[in-house]
Image (cartoon, rainbow, N blue to C red):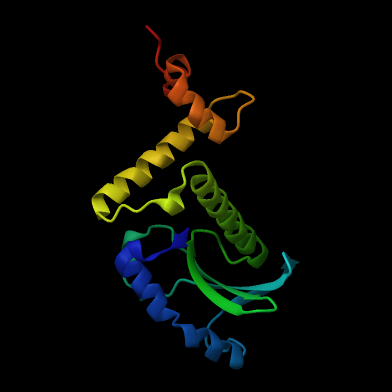
Length: 187
């Protein structure tokens, strides 16, 4: 599971356990202080070079709020480094898992999570023009985001020749198609 700020104390505990320079320090002493594993994947494409370095380590017994996460066994860190001819960037993401230590499996799960996130965000941006949303009220923005995701799920369940964008249009044009998408009988 991707660990984000909305997990409050757990995110804080993990990021404090693994501050950004902590990984560098551990790499410099070859992880002598903790039983960590490492896996590096170089990626090329889109006229840039990416490298993702995965680290996985057992959950420390003194991690904040550990008792609230039954079965938690490992912490993962994915450090993505992207470089193109014009710029470079680094992104650090934390993960928690109930899986035992195993770098290739951990890397596969992280890539799968990114693929789902990228596909969802791309679809929302293209189909619902989410990037053009100018709503500033947090509650309204949250409700709209939830409704768009719900609508996307309902549209994905329709098995016809239309794209998601076209299904969205057809739902607005045809009440029978709308009823079918919502799973209700027409009158």
